[in-house]
Image 1 (cartoon, one colour):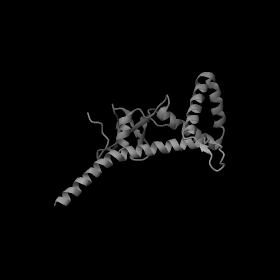
Image 2 (cartoon, rainbow, N blue to C red):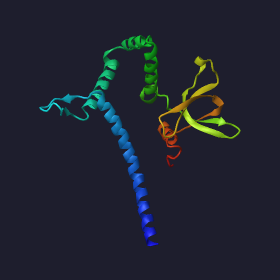
Image 3 (cartoon, rainbow, N blue to C red):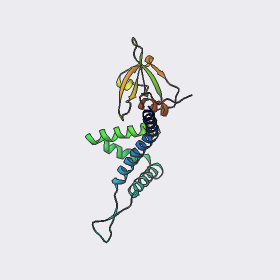
Image 4 (cartoon, helix red, strand yellow):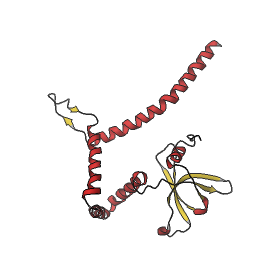
Length: 199
């Protein structure tokens, strides 16, 4: 009986430790993976006396990429007029396959960090009226007249525990806007409804 109590207590300690260590470890793993990916974009090798052992400074590639991105942003924001950027994008627009990836990736990045962020308005959408089933997502387009569709909005539904989602066009009357920070809603969806901010 005493051995079972000790084992139960040890298991309890393990679970508590896991709840503390696992999120930290997973976060560090993701950050290190992103850091390593960026750092490998520009890998500078400094030659030494031994040709088989070149000196590599960790983080130098990341620093160069970050500074290069900042300089590019400064150049196109302050030094060069918007017309040059439009000329470049017009040239890309004439390349059949390249333009698809370029503009899709540009819109995706601007949806998260640009001036025209899209994932800001969370909403609850009625999916099945008879069963009373609802789904949480983000309204990305309020006007779909360019598609020849009226009285409908575009709602993006992120998947839980994944970097994916689905886009659905739903009637406006089935959409109820949420007065809640988009970051909290995204955390709620990605965690599968587990992560809820306590009032």
